[in-house]
Structures are given as C-alpha cells and as structure tokens.
Image (cartoon, rainbow, N blue to C red; front, top):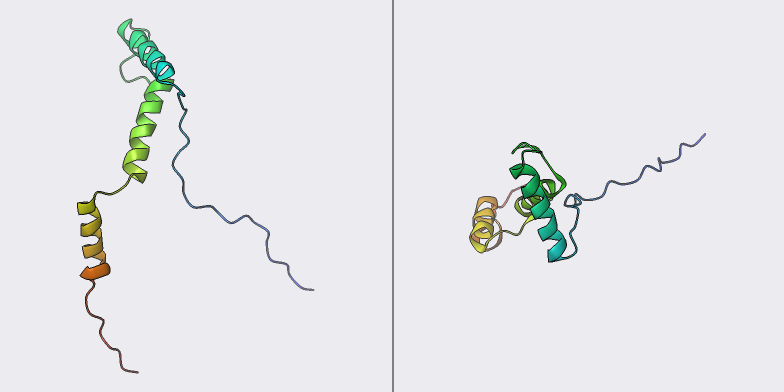
Length: 95
C-alpha cells in the first residue's frame, strides 16, 4: 500500500493583525469622542479597553512590529549580518 502525502495546508507568511478600520476621519473622530466621554464621565476606568483604544493600540503595534526600518537601522542590520558592501571576505575552504 502506498501512503499519500498529507493535504494539510501550508501556513502562510505572518501578516499584520487585522485592525477595525474607521473609513473616514469623521468616524475616527466620533469613536475618539465616544471613548473620551465614557472615560471622563466615569463609565469606564482609565485602563479599561474600548473598541477605539484597541484600534489605537493595534495600529501602534503594527507600525512597530511590521513597519519600515530607517536607513540607519537598515545599515546597522546589514553590518551585523555582514551583508552587502559590509560583507567580510569569504575564506576559501580546502576539500
């Protein structure tokens, strides 16, 4: 009997977390005002999450986790990894 290869799906590359989107500036402003009002009136504690605070936190997280590197950061990464013009000369290995 021959065994068949498993048909398990191949995992995809990591992508930024899905963030609730506010499609207009007015919607974003309305959510901010609602969040601020709930906190100021004491309905919510300062550290209690809301939909808008989660939106802000996830936007900040995605920017930090998946954001672009500055040219200085890219250069320091290349130096640390020895890539590009910063690469050390290769040593010949005899058989």
